[in-house]
Image 1: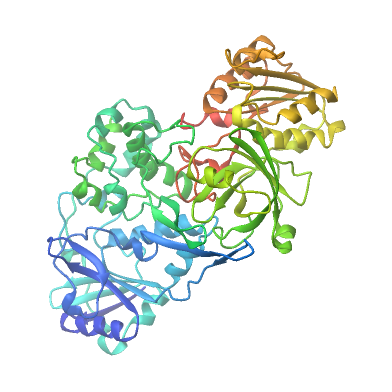
Image 2 (image 1 turned 45 degrees about the horizontal axis):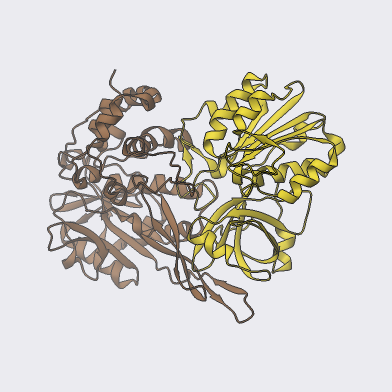
Length: 334
Length: 279
C-alpha cells in the first residue's frame, strides 16, 4: 500500500490525463432522469461527483449485459467456422465506483477465475483498473458496515481516493494502480486519517449473528411473508454488483450469427424450469430464498465470501419495496 | 473439458440417426476435426451441450459408454426450439458440441457387485451409457437388473436394445408401461416404475443401485431402494436440472449451494439427502 495526496484542483488533470493516455475511462454521469450511470466519458466536466450510488454497478465492464462468446458462419460444405476475437477489448479505467462495488469485483474475480476460469472475464479484468472514491454520504439503503465492509475500504480497488476538503487522500494498493499514477500530480501524504471524511453507515445487523442463524434459515416460515410482493422482475439482480447468472442465446440465422451470453436472474419464473415443465424452484418464495441464501450462505460455503456488499441498489430499485436486510433479519430471527 | 475457452464448441457430424419413437431420436456423432477426436475423452455419466448454431444449445447426457471410442451418442426428445432444430438435422449434418462436463459414475468401485438400474421415460439414455459400460466388461459384475418404464409402449426408448438385452439371458429386466399405456400385444409389466420396484424388490446384498428419471421417480424411488436394504451411499442418481454453461457459472442448475453441472450430475442418495428439494 502506498499513500499519496493530490489537490482537488489536480483531480480533473489526473482524470483527463487518463483519457489522453488512450484508455477508455468509465465514470458516473448524471442523466436527465436524475439517476447516475456509469458510462465512457471524455472529460472530467461530464463526471458526476454528487451521488450516493450509481443506478447500476460497473460490473458490466468485466461482465457485459450481452457478450459475444463467438460468431459462426456455415460454410458451403455444411461445416462451421467459429470465431472469437477479443483483441479489441480496450484498457479501461473505472472511475468513481464506491468501495462496496470495488469489493464486489473481488468476489467476481473469485467466482469467475478460481475454478473453470472464464476466458472472457479474465481478459476484461486484466485490462481494467479500478479507481474508487470513498463515500462521504450514505442513505437509508446503504448497509456495507453490516457485511464487513465500510465506506472507505480499499478491498478490490487499485486506487482509492478519499476527498478531504481541498485535497484527496490516495491509497494505491496494486502495481496496476501505481502504473496509472501521474507522479507530478501526487505528493507524499502527511494526512493522518481519512475517517472523519467518511460517511456514517448505520449497522443493520451483525454478520456474526447472521452467519450462525442463516445455517437453518432455509426452513424458516418467514420466507413466504418476506417474498410476498416479489414480482420476479429481476431488477435486483440486474442492478446487483455481485450477481453473475447468465443465459446463453443465439442471435442470427442458421447460416451466420453470434452466440451470446446475457444477464439472467434467479427471480425469473423460467430460470430453473425444465423442458418437461417441472420447475424445482416453482414459486417466487423459493426464488427469493435462493437469491438471499446464495448471497449470505452458499457463497460463504463455496468461496468464503458473503456475496452481498451492502450497496443498497436492490432496495432502492425494487418496485415492491422488498428490503434485503430486513428480509435477512426476519428469516434469521431467533 | 480441457479447452481453455469452455464456450467454443467442437464441430461434430451426425454419423447415424436412429428414430427411437415419433419424437425421440439418437444421434451418433463423430468429430469433424481429427485432433478434436484425439483430445476428447469422457467417462460414463458425463454430459454435453449439443447445439444448432442460430437456435441454441441443449443439455443431454452422453448416451454411449466410455468403453466405445471414436464417437459420442446422444438421445433426446423433441421439446422446444433447440431440440426441434436438432431433430430436423439429417445424417452428415454438422452440429456443435461442448463438453464433456460434470463427474461420472464410479464404475470401478462396482466390480464384483450386483448392479440395479431404475429409470423411466427419456431417462434411460443416461443409464444406457452405464449399462453398456457394464455389458462391455460383463464378467466384472454380478447380476445386472433393469427396471424401466414409460408412459406408453410408443415412448419406450431403445426398443431394439431392450430386445437384445432380453435375448442375452444374463440380465433381469422389468420393463413396464404406465396403466393405460399398454397395447393389446404388450406382454411385460403394467404399472408405474416405483410400484413395479416395490412389488419386485431387488436384492441389496453386495449390490449398488442407480436411479435416473423424471424428478418424481428419483424422489419416490430412492426411499424404496433404501427400504430394500441398499445403503444410502450405494444408491446413485444423476440429477438433470436446467443448464446453460456446464461449468458452474450460469447459475441455472443449483440445488442449494451445489452446482449439478460441476459438482454432479452424479450424486449418492446420501449426498442428495443433504440437499434441499430443488431438483
